[in-house]
Length: 148
Image (cartoon, rainbow, N blue to C red; front, side, top):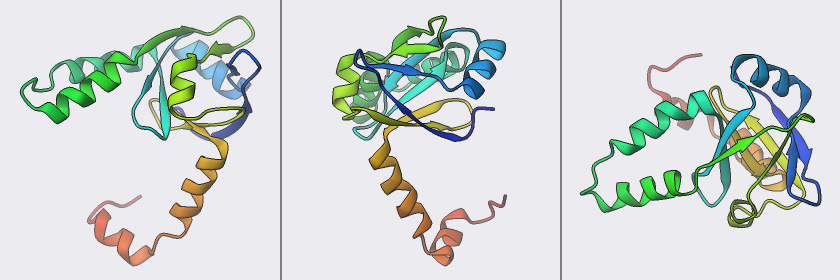
């Protein structure tokens, strides 16, 4: 399980140091190889390589005749890059991906179960505040029978 939020700083080379609590989990359960990709203009996705494989397989099965799905497939697969965590637990985020989602210095590393999302820390704070402002009654309509 990949969970929790950590605010980390990128160094001058664009490297992100995976916090110790996540690094230990990643190394023991998945090894040092991660896949990073672009999902939207707001954030990046970071998967342990083993967790990326089923996602990649599902993306490859999307119907090629649907232009919107083909664009999404190109976005996710075309920007996917294999990263190696170094001995210090750092990964080098590709410059182009950092530019596309405007990651500069402070980054929110957000655990999402099977992956991380990487957000600009200020953007993440905005997302958090928006989620906290949700009307519980409206949220309940969208959740239907879903309970925690």
